[in-house]
Length: 127
Image 1 (cartoon, helix red, strand yellow):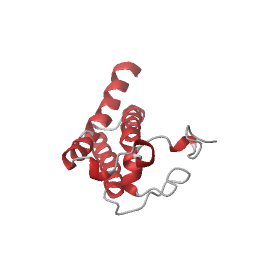
Image 2 (image 1 turned 135 degrees about the horizontal axis):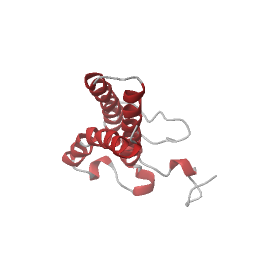
Image 3 (image 1 turned 60 degrees about the vertical axis):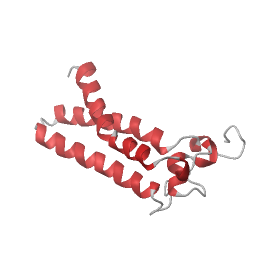
C-alpha cells in the first residue's frame, strides 16, 4: 500500500506530535479503568500517570533531539528522530523551523492529555 504520493506506506502518514495526544488520552482512559477495576488509590494512579507521561516525554524528547534514531518498525523508513516527530518528508517542517518554546509547550501539554483521558472516562463511562 502506498500513500498519496505513491512513495510512502499509508501508516507513515502521521507524526508523533499528532499521535501522542490521542495515545495519552487512551492511556488516561485505561488508567481510570484500571483504577476502578483494581481499586487503586489516588496516589497509585498519580504515580502510574506520572510514569506514563515521563515515558512519552522521554522517548519523544530523545527522538526530537536526534539522540536516538526513529526505531518504530514499518513507520520510520530513513527518517531521523526529529523528522519522525514533525514528519518532515510529508509536512516539509523540520526541527530548525519550529521554535524551541513551541516544542516545550507541546511537551508541557502531555500531562493534560493524560488527565483529559481520565476525565473523559470518569464522566462518560460511569463505572
